[in-house]
Image (cartoon, rainbow, N blue to C red; front, top):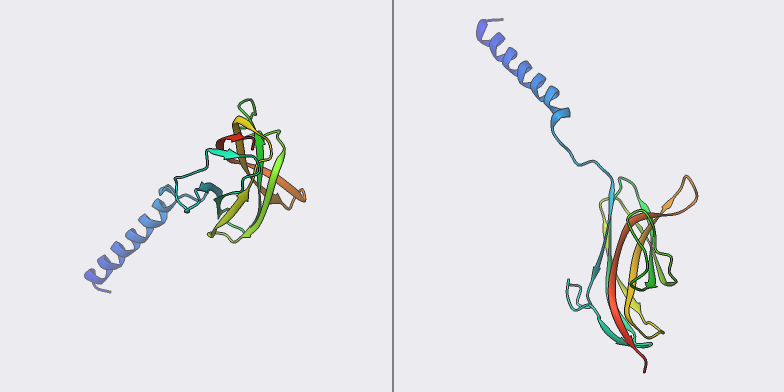
Length: 158
């Protein structure tokens, strides 16, 4: 082998070694996660219901995204609370469930779906809470993902 060919081979080997060494140092986002969102009646981030009458049906849309690395089975619980209802990313709300929506979503996919609801009780500053739960095959039950959203509404009796 002549000097030029040897030098080219050495440069290529050094470049490959550099890439192999640097690869673990390059940040990557391989943390699994899910997404939860609420959209208004036109599937936008506006025109959410704020003032309703009892038993008035209204429409919004839910959005769930799966980036868990596996197919996931989700349940969205819609609960009715108020200003004193406690919820966090580690504690689900202790409130009555108005509706439940269930979906199986492949990894890397998302789903937007209609949520049609009505509230039978009147009140000021009622809090509609939307919690995302996912099926845990290890424990054979649904576990709270820590993802939640809310809408505040005033409901007037008819």
